[in-house]
Image 1 (cartoon, rainbow, N blue to C red):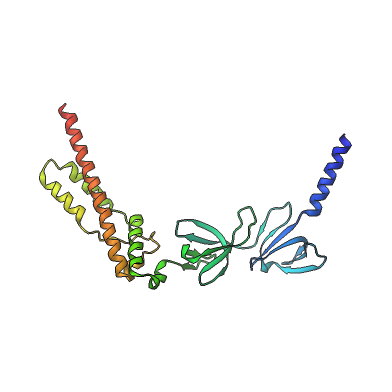
Image 2: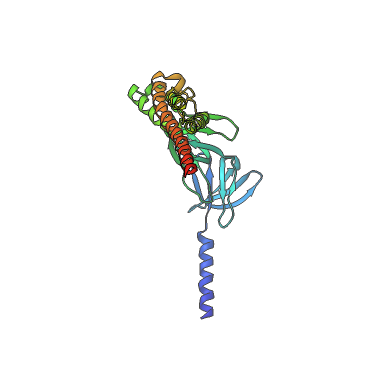
Length: 250
């Protein structure tokens, strides 16, 4: 029985040795599988799968070497891709076309190159420190007025933030609203058109300066947001002072 187990293990190990493959990833994104015969002086000798021919490959042409049963040897510095949904992805850009980019990413597992549409990209920071911005303002001329308005409304709901001063001021006015004047002041402040619309997190922030239709629609939606936030803050303060008075008089 023991001899049978040993024989089985021996055949298993032999099979692993025979079928184990090394993998090379080229800067073009091509995958090569086979056996690395030798690696020396910036070159490696490689025999492709199902071939007896030996090939000499420069390490400068490679992104990654993954030898069977050994850690991967990464030969590149990561670029950084930031998507408009906020995702930050370390990777290596392979190619950039007018509509998309392709990239390679190694996170412990070798996967084929991925292609991403440029409309989903906010920016790319390359390993050498240069930055490529893909904000939608570069495509603004392709938008109709209706599309700009809808885009502005959507962006304002996500990226406009009512100022902290307004929130705190409304709460304090609510607290002091035993008198009539603070109530008038609170409503007035809430209804004033917001002036600070810029938000660096907004991927379409530049449209506020370049597209009047976008800015107008954004400002209207931002005002709705400000009125809502201000009134909630005001009545929170008012409710707090009323609650305190009720507790004190009991």
